[in-house]
Length: 384
Image (cartoon, rainbow, N blue to C red; front, side, top):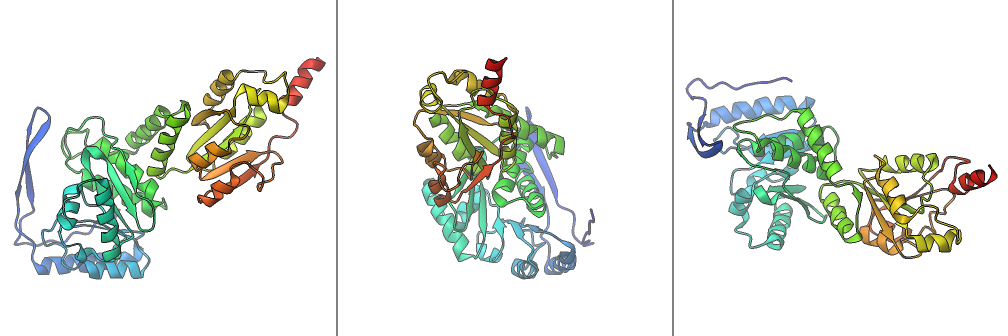
């Protein structure tokens, strides 16, 4: 890390006094003097010098005078294809015109666009602001209501707060934009980066004072969140989980089958499917449709046993049953990002393939392990 500071001998460093009682912050008192134009010009020049080696530019506007001309820095960065993220404090967002993304909290956003009566109005005004100021996106942080991510030309994404208990909101906004910027600079797509920032902020507000976040803490929180939402689920619950995954920017993969006697071929195929995205849904035929497809002596294992075995695999997130002859209706309702089948299936004839493509998803066929199948295993047992 390379840090460059701008010193101004006649101005004191801002001091922030926080009054805390019973582990809760009650009030903050700032001791400061505004920065003057000479200071801002110096900082802007230093920033411009660093752009050649940057992957992303973050501008935190505390509205203290340290940054005078945002538009010039934004234009310089965008001319070099460098994304610009801004934590805004001014009510006139024209100052940030052309930025990649702004991260206002709800109060800051409403100061710029007016009080929003509900989510619909918030989204409408946010999308209008994106168009008016030539932004790519807005990430509005909303305290206990989580976050709303608005991207030009896309459906809004709502992320529930991940904070279990709030002790101190100090630094939450800084954490959001720092994690968001680091993730995007590393190549992560904006929805996934926003989810990471949301989880990070939830951890920071659970600490007292100006707190830092370690990679281990973030990794463990993500693992806890993943385990919390795994297993056998009903269709209605899965629809909600799918929506939450979409809001978090997660890629969802879906497959289906009988999975009567779970074997190495199944596991290899499911692991390959899981590697295509962040979440894997496995839809399983009920016993009646298995008998219709495979014969009266099938399934060997009941629906509950088959689903329990699948849910035990670390690569599988959600297991759901379907009672129709094909899972087409279920697939169309869940709209996976990837629909995957194994064996010698024709991608054009896979149930649910058409609506998956129509909703922007992809259809893929993956190979089973040669020579391993439930039918072969049953024949081998009978032969012995």
